[in-house]
Image (cartoon, rainbow, N blue to C red; front, side):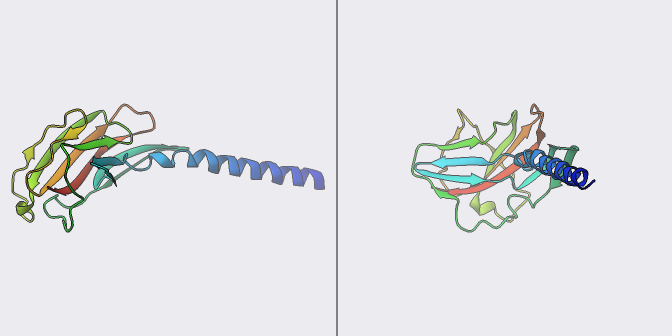
Length: 160
């Protein structure tokens, strides 16, 4: 009787540890992929500032949303970078299926949420460095991954 009890406890412990380990494998999908921004020898990792996200868990799918203020209502103290090179490179840790929007505003527009952003081109994963201090917004969408999907917004400020 004692052996059966010990065996049952060991099996239960093994199953519990297995479930915890399996569930932890999905942790990397809980948040949108990081956007790496490179300029010269500097690299910054940027998390999405607003998103609608869904990811796979052991017992189903988790959905959530995080929303922040307009990019021009955000506090922009020090710039993310001072640019010196010919391009600012953008690289997601997991490439999105689509960049739905890429735009910028001059720093002088901070506080004016009615200001129109200027569309920017992302060519070969890079944007041209700004001629003046600029606030950038990149909106990316992931749909083709079986472990996660959603949309994320990345906002950053760069000075020349």
